[in-house]
Image (cartoon, rainbow, N blue to C red; front, side, top):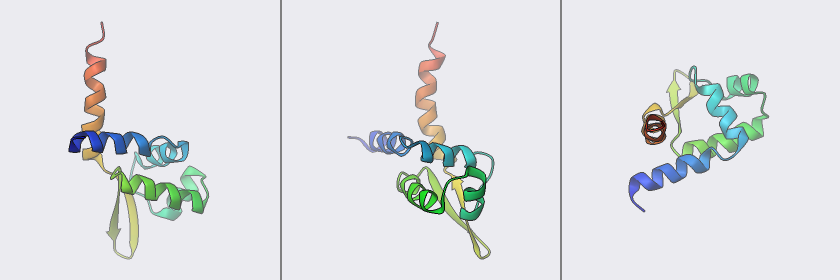
Length: 94
């Protein structure tokens, strides 16, 4: 597989779990700490830890250290690259 194909496969695989999709949905407005993610997503601490790891490995979520806190944010570059691929099919619909 080519690097772009691997990236797409990892992207899709990371969104397979509903918990991962909920985390992505929760992060779409702003970066959040783990505690904020737990409160807003209503997922357990263990579930957040497990699914954040999957999203980070797929590079869909990135960690950002700000002062003494760690924030999690969507990797908008990766998200755009992959959604652009899907968009080409939608724009060709008649």
